[in-house]
Image (cartoon, rainbow, N blue to C red):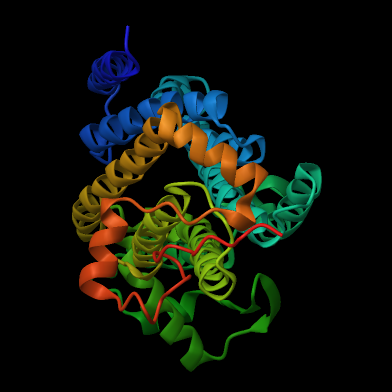
Length: 383
């Protein structure tokens, strides 16, 4: 059985199983089909990265693909984790909530770490693998702790933020007025019934004066409509995710900046894999920061669904370049090139495919970019 046949069987079986699971235990947000498709890409991507890891001629490169393998694994299990968490809601009403917040945090840690390792491997090519992992885990771990530690120190932290506390206080004021039979409830009337704290971050530093209190009530008021409250709950989580993706974009730009300046030897398609993660991380910034800025949940869901189609297209592109990498290293030509790159990288010219040739021919001046990024490096004579 060929690898392509295996991939098609896995993709078909995974999609059918996931679609059935999501049909019988539907997602209330309505992301079922998109979740099944992204999970299918994750399942096939897991298979592809597994074979790249096994066949990679350069042992050091294999760890790059091992890291991205975990990214695909998490992408594949996300829909099923969501299904199981909703089943367990009968026993624990916070089951879906816990699954979502922790799976989300781990997913973006793995993504940032995978991209970070690729960059560190490029910057410090000859360093020991354990040193590279140490640097990556140190840097990405610091970001992770900075942004996600609150939800690990307090599993219900998202229900205990300053926004939620103000929401609860304002809600009590509104209920009190409703109990008194007030028909037209205004921010001024609510302010007369409650006292809102002044916050510095999540620290209570005093009490708001009347004008500031009324303004705060107006800010929170839209979240009482429909399901808008959900936006307020997950706002800190999605802001943290936004920051992690900003870090991914920075790392990818650093990767290409170094590639341009130093032109280090690099395995085939690795640059393109790094490049296609740039729009992926950028789209994630738009999705998640859009969530942070939204106050209408239904409108956000509609826009988010449209954005997810772009993300799915990007994921297919990512999967394509991983598949091309596997196809290349599985060929005699590719295996020879990668082995030469390991043993004598200073004297081997840069490998270029039809995409590179197209870009160089129509968008770049080969003379200007000689020895940079897409242009081939001249082979040097051995001493």
